[in-house]
Length: 208
Image 1 (cartoon, one colour):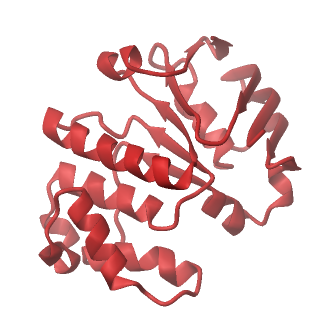
Image 2 (cartoon, rainbow, N blue to C red):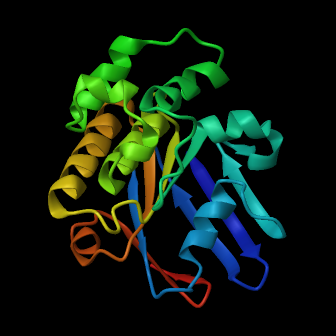
């Protein structure tokens, strides 16, 4: 099993969460606002304090991994994309730099094309990007080096239908090539209806 969670509790928000996620699995998480969906993803990303219970990745405790290595294996993407530096290139160089690897500009350009952004976008100013363009760049940054688990926290909220389709097509194509798992929080009814596996969070508890 890729990920196992046992008796996970976070502050007074989540209580006794148990779940398992396998390689290449896609899990869609839904529920009312404030029910603890985002807190669950943050706990899995090791971004929450006051966590009790067990999170195991590849049969090892999450806390046994150095935090930098863990976040390479479990990659977290959020609704409001936080881009770094001045340009798109700065953001797409970052995954190479933190791994101390040579930058592969051909790969960067291939991935830009896969989300309908032309090659000139490498040197676009971050400040000049639309919301949909920012979100696509952020997703590319998460997937230049595919993780074991991709956590998506309402990443398509506010995007138009065409951009949503582009983003999901890219993510699904990458998953089919690299076999990572996806846990996706959403309020989008179409995404929920089309989901292969769902988990409902209500009042800090899972109802699957």
